[in-house]
Length: 508
Image (tube, rainbow, N blue to C red; front, side, top):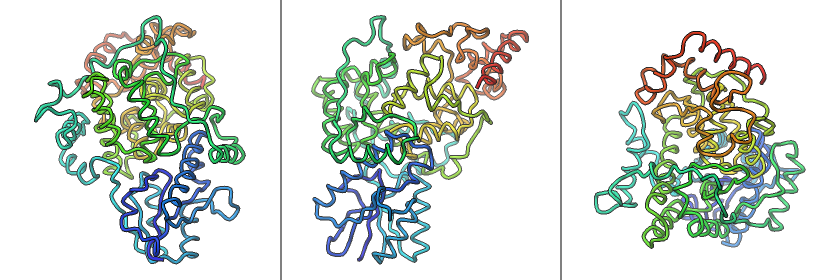
């Protein structure tokens, strides 16, 4: 054997760089399902099924394409428990002269595979991941010499470089960012009739995986009775088309809105398919831009969607690979609290958190405002150690791959990098949640109160957060108004807030 081509669970693309020059007479593909990938964090059952079902369907596609495949299934008693152990065993059995792979999305996995190659005395060729518009080297060049990295400037460079939503040298519509048009809440009547989610009934192969996960990881969080994610490229393409025609027209307007019991709303639900490489970001962006050109979707919403993929997705990948491994240990706010146990159950009296966590465990999904301004905001205000927050996000969401999840959590959500990514901590009282959803109407807590038994924990902890970090925040111009507000509190008010915050923490 010439090359053993290593394919990981988030590299499910028949046209990946790892297959360039593949010769079926001399090369073979290697894939493995191992328990460690579901246990190094307490991976939820929906997330594990998503990866394993997509991998097994991709194995069928590889064989149909005539590529020799060595596949180690989780339910084979001979399968080893970790990627390095399985790879070592198969190298000794197959005796390739070299390893080839597309660059992985996880620092830990990359180091493990490098270690195996070195120990076995084999060359390891790591090829560029073509699923991204830009390379890590290009991002490093952009970042060089900058004290802070702001996505907006990077995003504009990417728009220009790739000619996306451009009119000559100027942005389509005369402005780069339509955020101000993309922040509406639903009225009192709610979202109305939302288009049904694109559902993909599990086939026999996926049902086998579900049964395996229920048996092997039955004590892990999450439920599988509603699993209906796309696990093949064909299904992912259907999901993309459904989003473009049914949801994109209202995506922008309501992308920050929340409604109890409505997990799907007008969001795309494409992140898992993108991150497992069932979809290419170029075809996703092109489809959205084509809808705008055809008059089927407004510019503001299309620009907001494009920014998430061409801008934010590329940006967080660059942050991850240029800052690891040290980035994972950052804790700029010195947060030391433990993650509340009810993040794994949803058993809390706070209506917004109960709704977001319950749907997360049910579907392995929550949209970006639920992640940033509900589950993430509470952890930030409480002062949870950011590494524990990271482990939770990596565990529970079907789209979670570390390159995208870690910077979003530590940088954007928890401000653990001290402002490298985000220009300020994203903090707010319960009033924000009240403005963007009706959750507060059915909650025992009052977002207008910061002290007392009925005070919303978000509001109490917001003021406590500002007081705890007042000196640091005073130097941030984007926090000037909030710092002025906290400066107006007298000592009695401050102590009442601190006392209520201590009570909330003791209760956890």
